[in-house]
Length: 179
Ligand code: SF4
Image 1 (tube, rainbow, N blue to C red):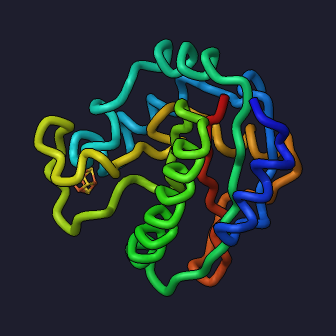
Image 2 (cartoon, protein in one colour):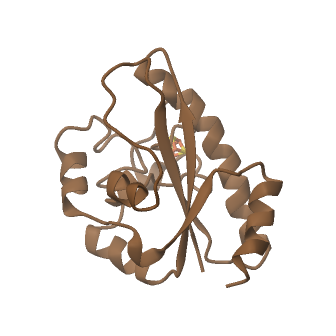
């Protein structure tokens, strides 16, 4: 991999300053995360980037073993209602996709983005991979890939906590896998 400082110049060029590097082996992948997707989340089976439309937990572990580094991008935001977050993350993720593309064009052909929310590029998701309306841009979230986001970001000192009031700022994270 090119010097990380070189990549950070690219991140800054795209307007990102709040990020941290972790080794891919430091990312915590857990079966309990997948279980919570299956039991307790309304997106299960209803978003083409969420389980069961994603790799198994074992396959995710294999995926991370094929990368050497991960960049975690931090985004903080407050919304009036929980569902309002999707309009915000749609814009955030569209910009992140441009960065993933820039890395690819810079020679990091394995660059792969995990968006900071389930895909909400469309207002009415097709719900399956085969029928996805924008398959070139749809990416899974870290949670849908069984990543324990709380445990992983705490390792590098990023803030995250269970929120009890809508007035509290969300701390959301996107993960960019790079070679
Ligand atoms: S691009 Fe549209 S159809 Fe595909 S996963 Fe995203 S919201 Fe669903």
